[in-house]
Amino acid sequence: MRTLAVSAALVATFGSAQASTYAIDPTHTFVTFEVPHFGTSTNRGRFDKKEGTVQFDRAAKTGKVELTLDTTSINTGTGPFDGHLKSKDFFNVAEYPTAKFVADKFVFSGDKVSEVTGMLTLLGKTNPVTLKASNFNCYQNPMLKREVCGGDFETTIARSQWGMGWGLNMGMPDAVKLIVQVEAVKQ
Image 1 (tube, helix red, strand yellow):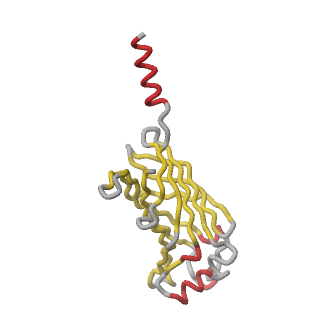
Image 2 (tube, one colour):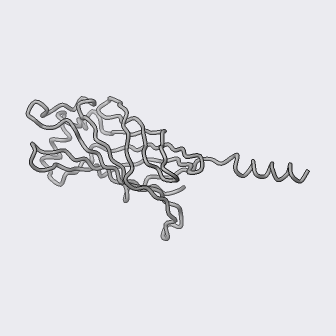
Image 3 (spheres, one colour):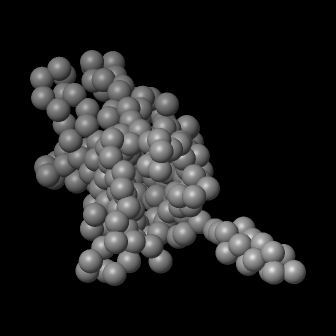
């Protein structure tokens, strides 16, 4: 009888384990893009407004993420360039004010996330994207008194897959490097 009670307690403790929910910390999360400028320098920009959640179960090695970017908040540090990127030539923010990444496939290397695969919706088109982790960690934040998980992720996409073809005929590259620095706070 005692063995049955202990087994039931273990099942109740571990069998009902669920993914923890984390809220993306917008002050420690940045989505940056890089694209070469006619083979000379590199144009960079980021989205200043973003929000989302992560569900993460380290024991089960599973996770889900939803990250929404406010494309109207694009920031390159140069107003006229921001204006061109917001136009119909690129992000068409008047018609598509958000971009969204939704993922439900996490790949682990040991106990660390090494890759996240999902779908990126941009300009009304959705295509698969895999983000590779170059850094991942969870820690107890001493100020928040809660667990924080995050890391640095990156991928390279072909912008034409989402219908962003302006400048391709002038020699501007199709490949855009995306760098995602993310931290999320356990709720």
